[in-house]
Image (tube, rainbow, N blue to C red; front, side, top):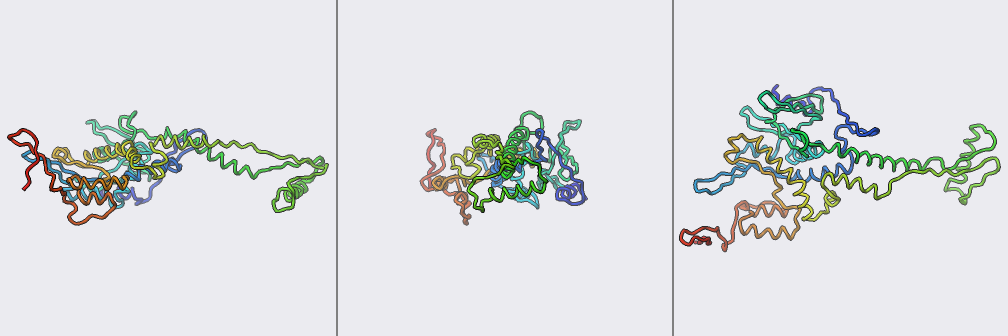
Length: 402
C-alpha cells in the first residue's frame, strides 16, 4: 500500500486508531475542546457567512500566451486533468465542500492545509484538506520546509511544503503560521457563556423557595413537610380560591424570600455579539442575508477577495512547475457571477454583451438562467469595432468594416 492509499485510509477512518483531543484552557472555569468555538451561535454564523460565499467560487486554469505580433491569447481550462481537479478536488468532496472547509478552518484556526496527491508523473490528481489538530514546521539542512501534522485520528504525518496548499490568516507574528482567533475570542466567549449561564440560573432560581415558615415550637420533620405542603396548596396554588393573602396563627411566622439574581441588561448583552462580529468583519445584515449589493460588495472586497487572492496565488505556485508558470499558466478564483447585484444592475450588463466584454451565457448566468447553444461566442454590435493606429495619420481611428 502506497503513501496515498495509507493517507486516504487514515483520513476516512480505515483501520483502528487511538483518538486524542487537545484541550485549550480558557480562563479558570471554561474550556474549549479543539474548535469548540464553532459551537457558539455567533461564531458559527460569522464563520459560515464567509465560508458559504467562498464555497460559490469557481476555480479556472488560464493559459496566457503572446504571439509573434504581440497579441495576447487566453485559453481557459486547456489541460483536461487540471480542469477535473479544479471541478472536483477529490472523490469525496465537491469543489463547494472543499472551499467551505478551507475557509472555515482558516477563519478559526488561522491556518488551513490541503494535501496535493500526485500521480507517478508528478502531476496533481487530488486535493485533500488535512484534518489536523496540531502542525509543526521544520526545515531540512538545505532549507526545505516541511510540516509534521498530528491528525484528528491520532496519527502523525510529514509532508513537504511543496505538496501542500497553505492558506494563512492574520499572518503577523510567526514566520510560517498565521494567527488564529482563539486568543481574541477567549474572553468574549467566556463572557457570552457566563451571560447565558446567568440567564439560565435566573430562570431556574425562579422556582426556588419563595416563603419561609418559622415555627415557634419544635416539630417533627414529617409535620414540617405536611404544614409546608398545606401552606403551598392553600396560598401558592393558582387553582385554589385564595385571594392572594396568606394567614398564619401564632405558631408560625411566614416570611417571603426574594432571591436577588443578576441578569445583564440588554445593552451589555448586545455588545458581545457585536464585538465577535467585528472580529470576523461582518455585521447583522451580512449574517441575515439582508445586505444590499453595495454592502455585499464592500464585504466581498474586505473579507472575501483577500482570501481568494491568497488561494489563487498558492494554488498557482503549488499545482504548476516553474516552467509551466513561466509559459503563462495560472489559477484564477472568482464567482464569475453577480448574484448580489440588483435586477437593474444585471439588466444593464446587456451593454457589455453588445460590446463583447461578456458572452451571452456569462450574462445569462448572472440572471440565474441556463446556457444556450452558441452563447459562448462573444458578439459585437455592427456599429462598434476595434481601435487601430493608422500609419499615415498617427492617430487612432475605427477600423473600416467590410
